[in-house]
Image 1 (cartoon, rainbow, N blue to C red):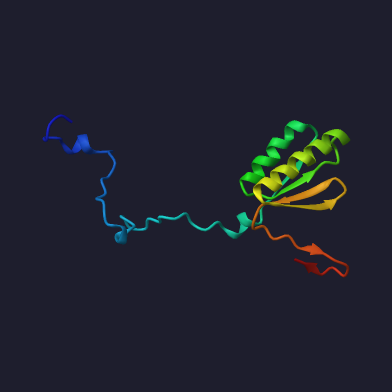
Image 2: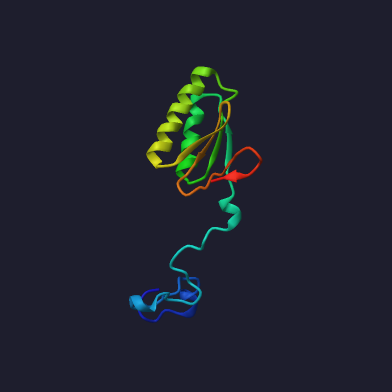
Length: 129
């Protein structure tokens, strides 16, 4: 592709050039969205269950929570000292991210990212927010 005499074969497969437009004319091509699509409702209902046994598993808990995914943390199969360390670490992550921690059962906790609604069931089976 030397010089101005480029053939059609030389241009084939190259990226399409889109002219720049003013900010009032965005998007610059049809069907382009400047902002990401809203997440589907199914994605909003997803959460992760992690049964930890070693302290090394705590990092995975933090990564999911930082990705804004609720984590059901099951410490029941971990040694008591390890469970305490993981719970302390997870509490720090929850505090640092402004998330929430809810006890579900003995040694089972729900770590909920900011914006996650958690309803607690009271006597009679009626949920309370």
